[in-house]
Amino acid sequence: MTTERVSIHGQWSSRLAFILAATGSAVGLGNIWKFPYIAGENGGGAFVLVYLMCIAVIGIPIMMAEVMLGRRGRQSPINTMRTLASEEGVSRHWQWLGWAGVLAGFLILSYYSVIAGWALAYVFRAGSGLFTGQTADGIQSIFTSLTSDPERLLAWHTLFMVMTMVVVARGVRSGLETAVRLLMPALFVLLLVLVGYAWNSGAFEQGIEFLFTPDFSKITADGVLIAMGHAFFTLSLGMGAIMVYGSYLPDNASIAKTSIAVSLMDTLVALLAGMAIFPIVFANGLEPGLGAGLIFTTLPIAFGHMDGGAFFGMLFFILLVFAAWTSAISLIEPAVAWMVENMGLNRIHASVLAGVVTWLVGLLTVFSFNIWSDVTPLSGIPIFHDKTIFDLLDYLTANIMLPLGGLLIAVFAAWQMRKSSSADELAMGEGFFYTLWRFLVRYITPLAVVIVFLHVIDII
Ligand code: TRP
Image (cartoon, rainbow, N blue to C red):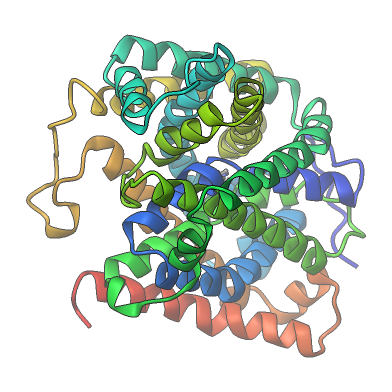
């Protein structure tokens, strides 16, 4: 049974604690902010279908692989990969996968924190009743006045990074478990309230149709890549976050069941967010392809018109901040765990160091919404055409680094690792489900990622 290793960073108190933490990592801005806006930009139904398929055949198996590697290595992803590579007798270079994950985590968190800052700002805007009775235009200009002001964005980004550093410094376990236990169910209930509002908005059917009726003429190769990248992003896969959480998982917990539970909850939250937002979009004559400001320019319309909207609005953005918070922590945990293991830093110093670096990189995103909004560094390359620095960071990390990380995790888990090792760690026997898992990770994930990449660069 498994290995004798224990993590020096501690362990989750139970299987449920891991599910909560992993769900906290998975459910975040990706579900509520990003999913609706990229679904809107990529034509809706067909995009959603591709995304759901990617969750099922790539996301869940890769999540199992990541948790499995993490629990077997019981260290930061860098050291886990090094240890497992030597144990399996394969190249030491596999540790680079851990490094790439650390880099991806920094880059993602740098812009994630700026968007979480928007949510923080909206807690106060909603609570003060600013949205009450506003038209769609009024709401739009509230959003623009926030994003066009670098100082305000910087202040909120700074606050969010400080919040993240504080929790990471205290250790993943204390505080985090309780936060997720209470706040995730609350977020879920509030989303249901919003879907209820959308139901009565007069355009519910149109919203649902947009989301769930696939029209394949509306999706491009790039759209498929975005859907696949998002499957990784929303489940926190491909960079070691789930691996490091897996390294704190008790030995007797079922990896398959926990991965499936986390993925289902994450998907449900995303679909609910979409069902709340698109009816409001259509009822107010807005465009589904509004972009990154979508939820910040649609949901306030609902809050501005419902009874108790100031209260519900404030509550919603508070919960969104919490969802983002529990995700942000996991983006930086692999780096912090490594610094504690290899640089002899304590958690506090490691968190501050990682936080300061991320904060600095975040300035790129802060400015890309205002003073650098016309700067499109790689516009010479067709797929990067017109992309701002923020767009590039998002595209490079979510659509390229994460799928590539996922591909390598798949290759390691199913081609490099001995079958007896993965079977031992997954502890699900060697029957149908194990065989299915191994088949998906061995063939389907790598092929899918490669085919989608080749399509996008127009080779096939
Ligand atoms: N999954 C989170 C969300 O949907 C974001 C996130 C947290 C993430 N950890 C990650 C994305 C690791 C990629 C990799 O908001």
